[in-house]
Amino acid sequence: MSEPKISVKPTGAAKRAAKSFNLFKKRLDWITRNPIPTVEEIKERKRQEKSEKAAATRKRNQEKKQQLELALDIIKSGYKAEAIKRHPDKGGTSEAMHGLPECRDRLIALVDRYYLD
Image (cartoon, rainbow, N blue to C red):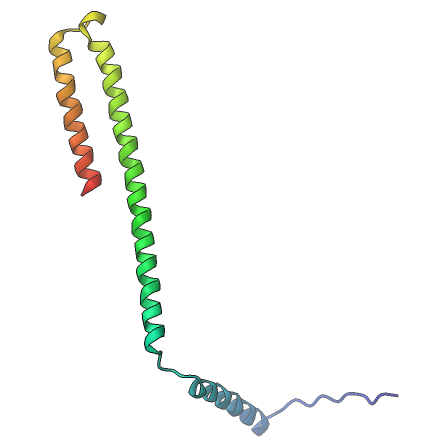
């Protein structure tokens, strides 16, 4: 037959001793490992930070480029639609048609300034 297991819970001084031992183990672990990072570790960390920053910048630039292309496509399609409506052959006037390219160019310049700054 197997002997019954008796569990004894530490109390008082035994608990304090166990706590102290655990703290000592943690301190010992901290002391035994080198707490001062090596030059290589610092360089590697800086390389990682630099590459993460570059990746974030590339992502932002890609999003800006997509937004710029979308805005320019909207301006171009709007220009074409208005040009068809205002064309003298379609019942519009030549004065109304002459103002369209200038308006389109101003909008493109405004969008370029917004997205490229």
